[in-house]
Amino acid sequence: MAFREPTGGQLELLSRDQLDKIHGATMEVLGKLGVKVYEEQALELFRKAGANVDRKSMMVKIPESLVKETIRRAPSGFKLYGRDPKYELDYSGNKVHFGVSGLAVKVHDLDGKTRLGTLKDVEDLARLADALDNIHQILMMVTPNDVPVEVHHLWTFLADWKNSRKATEGYNWTGRKAVETIEMASILRGGKDELVRKPCLLGFTNPVSPMQLSKELIEGALVYAKYKQPMIYAPEALAGGTAPASLAGLLVQQNAEVLSGIMVSELANPGAPVLYGTVSAALDMKTGTPALGGPEVGLLNVGTAQLGRYYNLPRRGTGGNTDSKTVDAQAGAETGMSLLMAAMAGINFIYDAAGCLDGTLTISYEKLVIDNEIAGMISRTLDGIEVSTDTLSVDEIVRNGTKPNYLASPDTARKFRKEHYLPTLFDRRTWEAWLHDGAKDIAKVAREKAKRLVKEHQPLPMEKQMVAEMEAFIKKTAKGYES
Image (cartoon, rainbow, N blue to C red; front, side, top):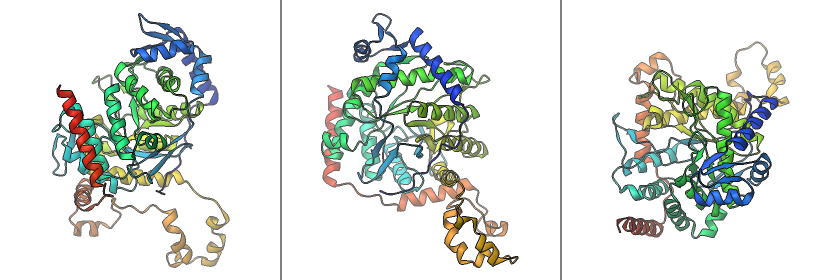
């Protein structure tokens, strides 16, 4: 599917010398302290590669030469495909993609109430995101509490695929569940060979700060590496809590955690696609909670983007998050600031770009619609200002002279759709026109649009036989947990 993938990378805060210093400090940390690896197969991969592995403490000290040699095996980009294999995302260069909020516990629903999520919410949110032009990737937006917890990931995949043709994510908590998602995706693709050729699962591994790789997620990462399904390595290090208070120190620690994780994938299967990522923020010293809507998140996204490019790796960041509990000015300010910085930095996949409330604990239907508009505005911003003989418009200025009538010009009709962002939600009418239509605030307008799209949008249908095969697989898998 051909669609707009905006390009970022204009915003950089760190010089080459500063990046070199962060790299050097990272190599010191990996060489002197190392990383604690709880998964046995990964320990053995490091040992065979030449790292210093202490089996008793599970600490792995890694020399710089091994880090460089191994990281070079990772591809500089990859393609991720939707349920519809014609839907293709190119995670390379500085292309930017907006993904929705993931794995929320609660939903802010179409009646304005906040409650636990259900499988119907998964279906409705996927259908809504499928209809929104600036949302590139569907995620497991809310955990459904009305299906068995052991197989909730499989029911969520099926609900997402039935209601959207766009790219989805993966689920790799433990090797067992990672294998289950591989089996489900193989049904979707018609076999494992085709799944390897056109990957549709994007795995998430969050190193545990400080300096640990967990057993469960690394188990899953090894499964995904085997089948060349892309894997994100993104710690949620908190400055002043689980990482140094200084942002430079956090970047050093995060860099060590991410690189050691990526090494697991590349040692297991050289060329396995990965994303260099972050979920990091400052710890709010007043409340003891992560400041996911704070300005530090934007700064860390820029640093992460630059470090990812430093190692020639595609990047994942977190933008669009807010600590607000409702759709208000705080939510708009925090979302817009972090999302713009991540996009301008050239983050290839922006997680939590749309729908977030309460630091990712809640996903909002109406905010999903609002954030889609913000993503559209940011995409236009990333396009910048084209300077050419045509756009300099000398002949047009001379022809028009001093008359204020550019509105009637054929040149205006030819250029304005490309040059100007045309909102589909935000209100630019006069005060009188706004009053005449009910004086609705943006949250109400967005909720009405969300209700309409959930009701009317018709996603590309799945084959009934494929749906039946997946349902049978889920039920069979669920019985395996009962025995």
